[in-house]
Image 1 (cartoon, rainbow, N blue to C red):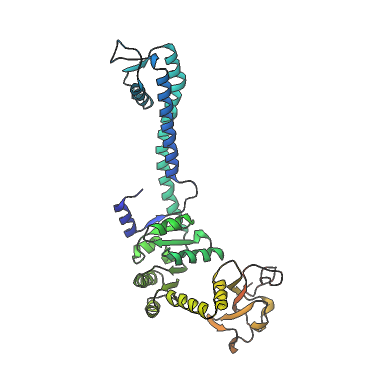
Image 2 (cartoon, rainbow, N blue to C red):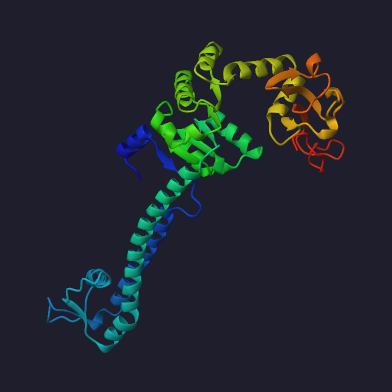
Length: 364
C-alpha cells in the first residue's frame, strides 16, 4: 500500500486505478502467506514428533532435539540454507525427510517464487491495462468528485445505458476513490484543477464532463481547465450557492445545477404540499413510479401535436432549443424533434414505451 508521501505524489500528479477484474493481488499474497506459514507449522510438528531421530552436532553426547531446535531445523531446511549442525540420525527420520519434508520444501520454494512472480506479473498487467485503457478511451464521461452527487450521477448514467467502462472518476483520494473503485469505475486520483490530472483522465477526448465537488471555487477552476483542454465537451457543473452560477457559466459550463436552491425548492414544495413533494421525489427517483426521459420522435408521430402522444410530453427539443409543449412553435411535431416526456418507470401494458415494440423512430 502507498505511504503518505506516495499518496501525496499520486494526488498531485494523477494516479490511474482501474477496477479489479478478479481477486485482489494483496488477497492472493495473503493467501499464499498463510499457506507458507502452514507448511512451516506442519514441518515443525513432523520434526518435533520425531525429535529422537535427530542429532545436534553442537551437543554430541545428547541425541534428540527440543522444540526450538525443531523450529530452527525447519527454517534452514525449507529455505535450503542447510547448515548441517542438525541432521536426521535414524532411518525413520531420514525416510520422513526424503518423502515428506523434501516435498514440503519444494512446495514452500514454489510458493515463494510463485508469489514473487505473480506480484511482478500483476504489476506488469496493470501497466498494460492502463496503457490499453488510455489508447481506447474516447467519447467517455468524466465525473469530477465522487461524493453523494457524483455517485448519484454515475448511477443515473449507468441505469440509462452508459457502460461503466465509459465513465472515469477524478477525485483527490480517500473513501471516494475506494467507493468508485468498488463500483467498477476507473479512477484518476488527483486535483481536478490541474491539467495534468485531467489529461490522465482523457478529458480532451471526453464528450461530457460532470463537475460535482463540494467547493464552488474548485468547480469553477475545474471547469476552466476542462474547457481549456476540450472546447467541445458538454460540461455540467454543480454549485452550492446561486450567486456562483453565472461565474460557472462564464467558466465554460453548459449547464449549471444549484444544489442548495434545488433542495430548498423541494423542501418548500414538500412543506406547502406534501403530495406535490412526493411526486417531485418520485420523478427524481430512478426505476420506480414516474420518470423523466428524452426520446426520439417516432415516424408515426410526425405532424401530430405533442398532447396527442401516449407519453406525457412536457417539452420538445428542436434545433437545439427547448420549447414547452404548449409553445406555438411546436404545435405540430417535425422531423428532427426530440421529446422530453414523463412516463412510467417500468413498462406497463397500458403505457408501452414508444420505440420498444418494433416501431420505426424518426431518426431511423
